[in-house]
Length: 271
Image (cartoon, rainbow, N blue to C red; front, side):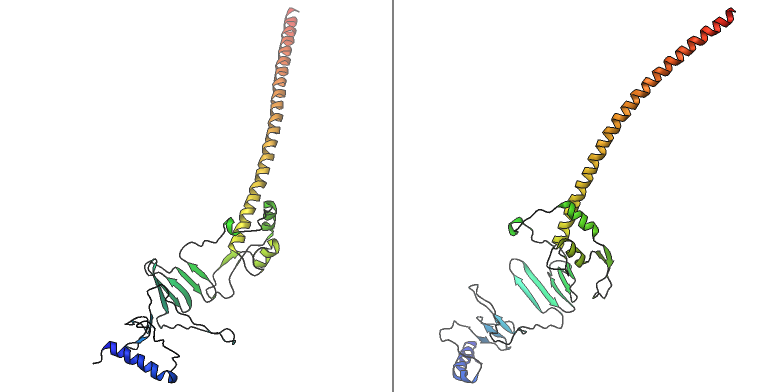
């Protein structure tokens, strides 16, 4: 039975003897212990005495990393391919956030096994579902060329856009949606990356501006209605006064008529 230490020594000597015949270019004599280890299971360890995976890299100074680099001029190419028949190609672990699973099959997903449900799911047709809240950067500290817009113009443009119900052409489930065409929105406002896409930042911003324009419009209408109501109130008060004067005149007239009627009746009785 050969001791593990001797195995490593034999392996190191073999590397130094047969280096010209192998793919190894060099193994520095000053390399730290366990710089390269192959155990009985065929696991390859870099910086670790007992590798527990097919390739196990370990360092204790915070520099452990893996680099795959092609410096040729052949153009873009595939550098890494991960396969797993169970659909979960790899997992990522950090001491602060625990375990995260990444998988790709008919969809690409990110999952935290400690929480129920799937946190992130991207379909092959580009539909994205997340379990939490989508927060987009919108702080004034990351913005420039800030210009106020006319809320009334935003309202006028928005109401001119057709809103339709539709289905995406690549949606096998024929899911129905409601909204404007990106081309119409871009023609009206000229916002975003182009006429084929819509940004929720832009659509929500235009909607808020249009609501402000609508409120301002309604406020003006309310002020006009209040002014009209005040004017009508004055007219009503004038009519009330005129009616009161008319009542007095009628009462006076009735009194005079009654008085003359009584005099006429008395004169008739005297005859």
